[in-house]
Image 1 (cartoon, rainbow over the protein chains, first blue to last red):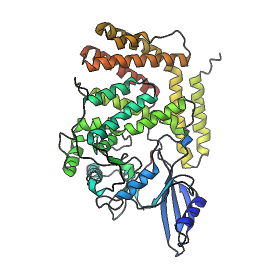
Image 2 (cartoon, rainbow over the protein chains, first blue to last red):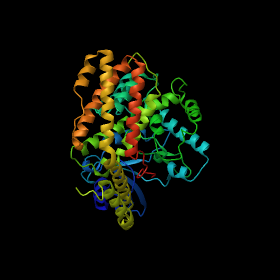
Image 3 (cartoon, one colour):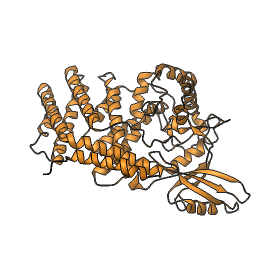
Image 4 (cartoon, one colour):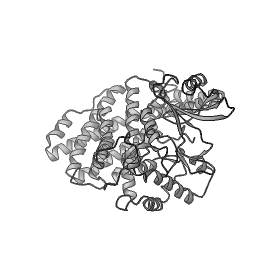
Length: 334
Length: 153
């Protein structure tokens, strides 16, 4: 995803506009996709900035997601009234021009909510803002989402598919991890009440909220998005290690606001169920992490992430055991 | 064998070289992040090289005792088969110890499944304590959560 590649792409898709790519610089950080900030000058003299988001080479990456599915979701949500995303502009669906499948979106002059939190704001207010953004995605009516986005046939089938991530993990490592097997059993003993399915972002955290002067916040990085149980996003956020955390200091305050904005009941979402959904909301990532460690075990190279993500493996392991130990036993295994 | 320095000390020295002399020369932020990640991995390897064999050799008999006790108390055929299929050999070669540890872990899971399904409180408490100890040992070697490289956009 360099200047020459982006130039040839724009020459192909915008032949009348006379693009000149002025720069294309990688944005450091992030565990999953390669991201580049690019600036373009058009023939009419205007300039525009873009964010290019593409797949790293397979031998340099651990997390797997489908750029075409992400593009479809971006198309499905870009005009929804309840929340904003940076406008998705182009998609190199084959990698013919950009060297990899690549989504090109408008760049927003913004700061991430994580950086804002680092500046020491009023955290009660920040918590309310965070919950409001989360709820804005979760309140999206399913009938406003294009049929191109896959829908589980039922909540139960969807949850079973998520729980099956634990079966996938255990299969990858030859069932050698008693902590994962114990966690899976506790998950099955404690199925939560059903809630209406909606958009699940899959990586909903302050680093993926962009704050821009004079507009509502933007939500970015939709690679793990799907339709499903919104509590997956809530549980996922519980494990985010970057301080300051907006849930842990006062879970009740967080969940009271979330319930008020989404209409879910205390039976449907409370601190115990939020913990339950940490186990499920991180499971898609844990499958990839464990596959990465198994690949390294098998002599394959997965870049620095293949070994570095053992830190995340240990982090999740600790949380999984901690949270599942707290769950009650049931004679009835779902 | 040359024992001075030990493998863990060699790795510590490599990390020191990387952080003191190599890291300051790296100006590309993306490569700085990669180097930070690699140093975390190497520091975990320092811990692992010191202890991983002894940790696994300490845990294996506890798993095997648990499985044998569950098999004896319940008469369950699957647990008895798991107990019969797991053992701790005399080899201290890492790959042999890992193989023993993995088979003991599978057997432990089989026994734990049974006591959870039947809500056998006495064995559950004992099994949960072994799981806690396993994660505690793991945390002493692996550094756990790290925000290095997490994008703040």
